[in-house]
Length: 184
Image 1 (tube, rainbow, N blue to C red):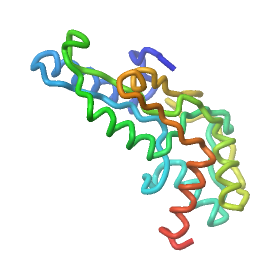
Image 2 (image 1 turned 30 degrees about the horizontal axis):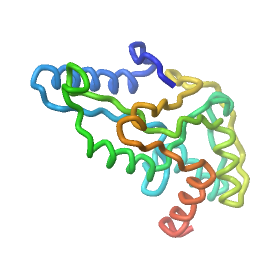
Image 3 (image 1 turned 120 degrees about the horizontal axis):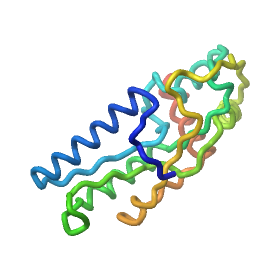
Image 4 (image 1 turned 30 degrees about the vertical axis):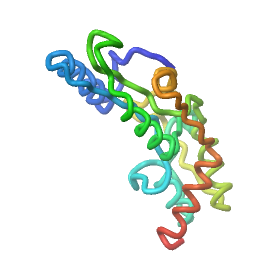
């Protein structure tokens, strides 16, 4: 999805966009190559424990209900960590230059480009964990958007890489890592 990022819905998004604009200005003023990366809903081993995939996994394994905002009708471009890492490695090998445009600055999206309904993510996680969960269906959170997904065309054009790990494969790998790591 290619969308203007000039009207962010949350402070989080606004700080990310402000950082991109400052990096662009710096690259312009000092001719220092600058590459920005926009990651889309990263999950997998060693993930942040305060993010939904870990919160959901822990709660499901402990038999606790999970809070599901927007009644689960949120679409996210869940991106497995290995796809993020491969995108970073490929981008590191190609610095932006003024030969490509007036300013040596680029921004690349790294995501699967295929949004997944939050309820489908949860059900896939339940399947892989072999347990069902109770869901507290809640209204949307302030500043949340109903759908996000990445247009990775620029990343693919520049590096030849397009993230490709499917949600079931990624969740299976997350669960395979999570259980022994947390002793479950």
